[in-house]
Amino acid sequence: MGHIQTETPYFQPNPVAPIPFAGAKAFTADPTFDDCKTDSCKASWGLRVISSTNITIHGAGLYSFFQDYFQDCLDTNSCQERILQVKGSSQVAIFNLFTVATEKIASGIE
Image (cartoon, rainbow, N blue to C red; front, side, top):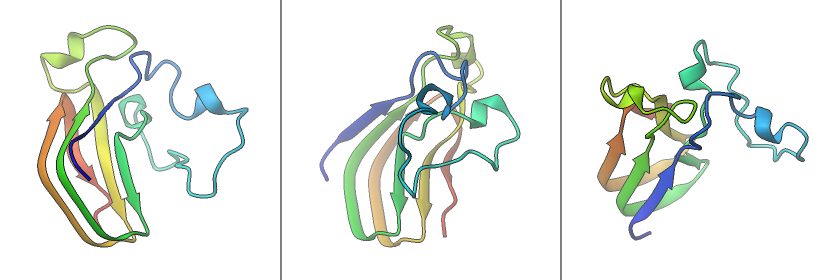
């Protein structure tokens, strides 16, 4: 993949994920956020690589600029707890990963 970019919904964590879409039909691999202890953890993932092989990304911008439409979290880089998950995958390479205001850049690396 070439340069990819995502931004967390500006309203999160009010309501927390996946509440805005609770009535929608879930896919089997959709995250449940059951492992989260804080609201900043219950925000949408910028990128998830799940059960995949031979994934190469050349440039990714995964951004979190707001909490509940406010930008106070930018000063402490704490708008979101985590933004990238790689799980059950192999041969994953990500070059030039850019994040904003995220506490843990990558989670669940297995």
